[in-house]
Image 1 (cartoon, rainbow, N blue to C red):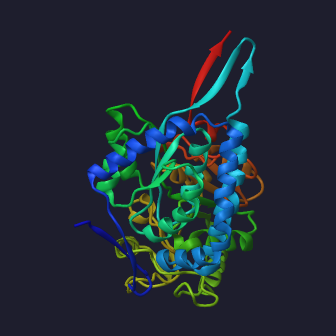
Image 2: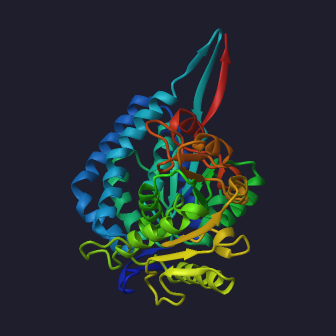
Image 3: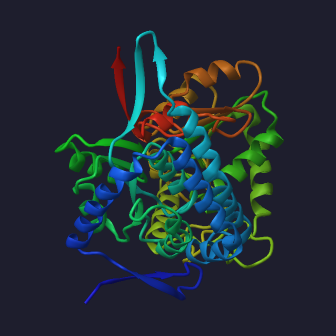
Length: 445
C-alpha cells in the first residue's frame, strides 16, 4: 500500500489533502524516463524551449487566484503575499527563460567557440517558505539549458507544488518535467540516483548532507543555504527609514525568509531612539490566519520551526537580553512580533538562523567591532548598512554575497542571487548564474 504524505493548514491544523510518496523503484523509473526524455529535449533549439515554457506558464494564468489561496492555506502566508508569489512565478518564468536564452548563446573567441550544453537530468529540491518562487528560479534555467528536471518540493508544501506542476507539466514533452514528493528519505534517494546536477535551496545541514552524497559521482551542485543576515545602523542613518526597514525585513513572510534581517548592530548614541521606533512599528503588525484582513504576520509554518524560534527567544532572555516587545512563551502556531535588545555573541539568536518574526539588537561604540561581529558567522547571504558618511566602506567590509546600502539586498535587473561563505555553493540568476545549469564545451577550429 502506497504511503501518503498529509498536508495541514498551519493556522488550525485542518487536513488539506495528501500526496503519494514514491518508492525507490519508482524514483529509479522516473530518473530513467527523464534521461530518455532528455535525449529529445536537448535537440530542441533554445527558442523552441523558450516557446514551450511560455505556453506552459500561460496555461497557468487562469488558475492564479486558486493557486494563491492554496499557497496561503498550506504555507500560512497571507493572501496578499501569496498572490504576489504566484504572480511573480507565473509571469516571471518566461522572463527568466528569456534571460537564459541570451545567457546560453554560444560565445565566439577567435577560432574557439564556447558552447553551453546540458548536463542531463537535474534534481531541483526546493523549500517551503517560497514554494513556487524558489523552485521557479532553479527549474527554468535548468530546462532552458536542455536538461530535464525532477522536482522535489518540500514535504511541508506538497499540495501547492502538485497543483502548479499539474498546470504546467502537460505543456512540455512527456517526462521533461516530473515531480517527486517526499521527505528526507525521498530526497536522499533522488540525490543518490543517476542525476547529473542537484539544485537545492535550504539549510546548511541538508546542503552538507547533499554534498557528501553527491561526492561519490562528483555531481554538480548549485546550492543556496540560508542566512543569518546582519544590519549595521550608523549614527548618521535615517533612523525612521532604518526602523521601518528592520521591521519589514525581519517580519516579512513571518520572518521565514533567507534574507530576513536577523541581527542588528546599532550605534549607542542613537540606540534609544532607534529601539523605540522599532517597537512602535513592530507593535502595529497584526497576527492571524491567511484569510484575515490586514494580517502582517501569519502562522509559523510548522511546530518544529515554532519550537526553534521560541527556544532562541528563551535562550536570549536567559542570557541577559531584554524583551522590548513580545513574550518568552507563545502558543503555536503564532509567534507574535518580538523585539529583543541586548543581544550578545553567545546567544543562539546571534549564532544561528532563527527564521521567525523576531528583531534582535545590540549596541556598539566601535564600528570595527560591529563589523567584526557582523562577519563572525558561517553564513554570508546578505547584509545591510544604514548610514551616510562611510556607509560604502562598511559595505565593502561586510562578508556577504549581497549587500544593501540604505535598502534591501538583492540587485536590480539581471543581478545574481548569491551567497558567500556557507550560504552558497554556486549561485543562480544573471548570465553567469544561468550558465551554471549547463556544461561548457569549447570547440576550436
